[in-house]
Length: 299
Length: 299
Image (cartoon, rainbow over all chains, first blue to last red; front, side, top):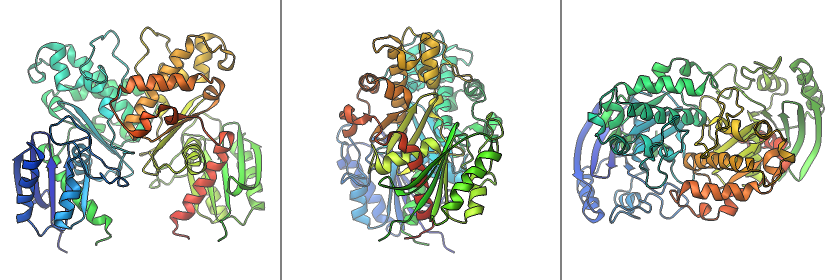
């Protein structure tokens, strides 16, 4: 049986990756273009997709906030954003009209989560979370095989957390100060220590507060979606190898035996790094395309 | 068209309500029996259901923890619990075998949430949360029309929260101390003040810490499921009328404008009391029955 061919667009804040593939082992072409203004970037995306016309479906994994409520006329667009020109940019409506194929649409972090679930560190699981910790903190929570989202997409990075005893750093989130993102994102580490995260020594005490904040995020995820695994990536996680064992220890302490599942009993296999690394973004767009085609009832 | 007739069982910690109904306006019979030991209570339930044999489906809304993973042989049973005799009690398997009808099964709080969404304070909404604040704190989060749960059911009551500045009460949760339940449940109010919640004056400062903790729970719910409404009930909520406005004010402050949705702009309509009151439990079992019948593809 021939695998259908999918096109994907991962629209990031600084660059956009267009990909044509059936899956990770069969990527036909990948084109990176800069994300500037929509009146430049969208035509550039279309110039690539125009060449690829024989795809069965298209997936779009976009930076947020995006409108994912299918009942709204703005479905598939960027929502209100300070990013110049991008507010209300009609991504899915415009590309859907142009190509006439099923369109999958979600945030980049949900796309990456779905890719890790399809081909990566959460392969085969219906219940898992994928968190990326970098300039910001984003989480895709998959429960029962579906991304958890309501009238708009989840924003777990901005959950407020129980502070580490004695830590009074105000945090860097412009909205919440010491929400999880305000305490554990890359910029917050630099603001707290004066040292960029990648250069901060492993034994610097600031890593304790970062590990604590991320363990609290995991505590919330465990009690929310009851995942079988939490995949953690992004620049902060991948830049400091000691973070994983520290988060696992603090998560075990924080849960205090409350939820007893087999995956939680094996903490080393519960909080894990991603398997797809930088490929999760564009491959996420491919999964969104695949799901859009499946939703049409096509074989 | 004739409405199908459903049987429901709300199994609570102290009493069990059996209900025969097509919906809230057509309850044919309701029988309450004490919850003692399974070898007494299950036969008593069966004696009631035996009389009702002409129901199209059966819903069971049970105290937790329960096994909701359909891939497990224990699906539909009580999980490990300190409640004498009830660990591993096979509710759905036993009643399903006896009556040969479709069986819906979930926690009592998810059932109550579904009932508020079907006929109550969240009627017509696909994305909402229902929280009950009493002896414990339970939350049913409905996203995209489905309860959010993963390998087991959510336990939002045990989310750890950012503490109110200056509050150092240790909390009463035997697992976590100052998780939300440990700070805002009825027993925690009494432990903190020495006064039972229903007798605590409205101007007692302890209500600030309770309102803060519950607003933090709502903050987490908003960023998790992005509900269109949060319905809050239970003895603590219903016993102190000032809690609603206090929670709304604190939630607005805590979110700090981060998520801007139309429902959040109308905070009085966003955090609301339940509409079904004590009927949500047994009616929840009826919704579970209704969903189980619908899942079979029956008209």
